[in-house]
Image (cartoon, rainbow, N blue to C red; front, side):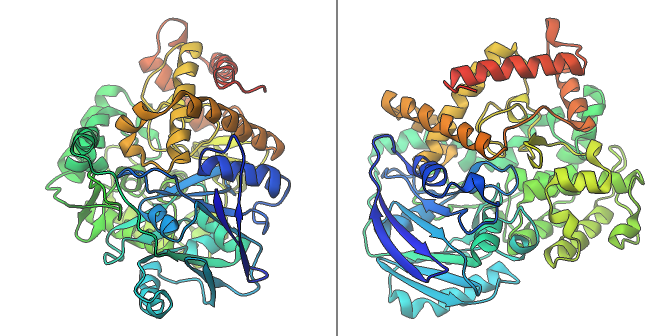
Length: 563
């Protein structure tokens, strides 16, 4: 694989061809570098040796041009991969499989890559990512001389939190059609470990995309949901009573009551009069999955994190929050989890409102929400966090939970002694059990309870498939056709590197541990109560731990991991 190394401390760069019989894709390469070259597991999460590996797959299909960012997560402590649509093609245009950023610059800089040339530009961290994008596209025209390029930036959230993300607008659609390497803290690593505010990539190579009629037809069928409805339009109507509301408090209510609340606040308010236009992330892609309303991109999970999860059902308010956090470079999913626990604590007076200089407290009442009040408080806290005035809320939810005394109101998966990750917004055991990478879909995420041995096999199979999608730079919205093309050799090699992910976690003292918060246990007990059967129905905490242990043993066995 052809790799461009950039040392931002020395302002130097060089190319290397990395050959390894088991490296089949970009995630393999990233794991190899972190485990063998940088040994980042033994360093602080914001060490300059927490290299940011940015790469792509080598396929020529529509939907396989995602950029993959690989780094040690400051949140869960293990290796994380976060993907971004469209940027991968620009890495290929520049002539590389991967670009590696190492070292730490004395001054904050922006890195511009054009073919085999690298330019270092001193600049400040953007106050607003979209304003900075407009400025940089103008300023870099002379450097690129007509060559197509794309910009990716981190924002204020990367300086003041551990869950900063990297944002890239589709060229020509700045601030409207953006794609985000959101989970795991990639932006925080780029800025705090390397003092880099962003990167642009472009080159002269012509990248061909397979467009045979039969194949395009297969892709059209596989991506129908995303093209016709998008995740926001489809997911809530599918989830119904399994929708997560008010920091998971909804699951303390009976199913029938949850259905009533869903009808009143989701169907009749959040989804009312929803209309959208469609676009792509920048790839030449038939999914056309980006849904835009009032010049704001609408996706299920960001909407959930800044909407129903924190008691806001007014779509206009939610869109304002979405645009704000994207411009600041904050992960809406992790940040939503933080706000949910804090909002509930304020509502229940577990912590006083004075601690955040608030005049009012948010309303976390499943039957009588107040979207306007919660919106105003959320907007205020976003600004305070981004400007470093509420440092505690930029910490891991596990750390802030202990410091504020609200651990039992937070739902997260503990890792090691200090790390954690919040699950994606689905009521699913598969996302909370001890899998190889949390904060993604490296597991089953249906609302089911099956015997631990049976479910472990299902989750292990999803871990392998999702790993391969990232490894090859394939958008998971294309998984229905892509997974049918995976060879036996790729499957077997993936197990080798998945075992390396677990090895890294062990060396970093960041293995997932049994759940430690009351809210997590409450939500999981309710899942067993509603979806379990036989011995796995009405369970206490000791029985849940028995399930956890049996599941983990079988899961690791299926992945051929020696614990």
